[in-house]
Image (tube, rainbow, N blue to C red; front, side, top):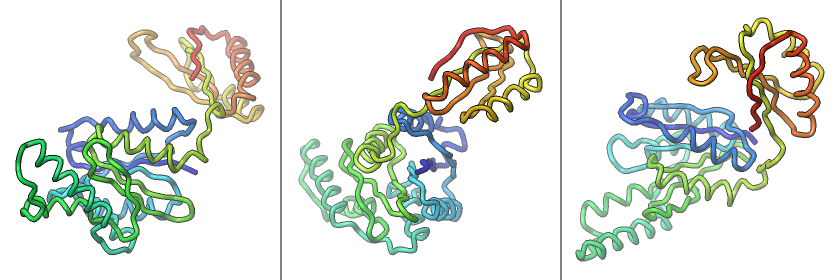
Length: 268
């Protein structure tokens, strides 16, 4: 199973708000031994959102979509999900009940009468309009649910709000309740070393040799202005921990044979 993310909103692309979801989804997946395979950023353009979601449904992947499931004119994700899935947009009975519970809660908090037929409260029910057959994702913050919809094979697209205080607990709930079969703790590791004064071209033959000799991936992350290490390359291997020791030992031996100046070693 591959895992992906879709982050929706003009405010992200314009710079009005800094995206926090990408780093968090990487963290939440990583804590469960899963790596994020890709991420897409999409503005509030219905055609582009629909195309992106259609691709997500067809991918067979587990995809988390952040943002655009509210009921204001610039929220298009629910409608686009219906178009992309080929299903009608319908009011979920369970979502309606949760939204009305929230309306009642707010009325009690404010000392006001419960008026579910008031126009603004009726409009709030739009947030419970999902593609027909969608499953709800509970929202512990204010009860307004997100939703999940199946794609190809075992793939599913999970839709959560753009607000981190709501979205992140909802993503965790999805992961722990529906994705545990893909958790892979202790089956992936990275080990690297800081290399000073080298060019990537000098290290490429060693990197190629390591990938031929060991079932690991080799990575090279150059930096020209690191605040601690200055100009350097972080060179490392990543893969199954059971094969890492031999691969990393050969990496260090190769660097020493090249008479490279080495700095700290890192393990993730």
